[in-house]
Length: 147
Image (tube, rainbow, N blue to C red):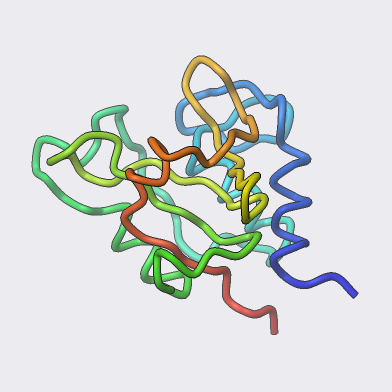
């Protein structure tokens, strides 16, 4: 029997190859990192838990607002950053002092750790969770149990 984490990873991997399109969330047509998570949510759980307002590429940076982190805390279950499991949502801070605004789904754990994410210029890919990426992780979440 598949765990929720396995289901989330399998769905995220279906999106690999989807082009990067800011604010999009359409399998095969376009997605950004949030759009990938939104698409996974729709397949696994149904309706999205919140309406997403329009956002610019630099959203929340001028104000230093951790909007994405707060939203993740509202709809996902926080867990310790070091307690990695397949299917976790990882939140990254891309620069020191910047707001956290990149998301991915943990694919594999262990020596070959990976994560699935939508990355500008590359689309949805599964990348090694190498040390430079690990150093950028600021929070880790798991999807809520299905009811």
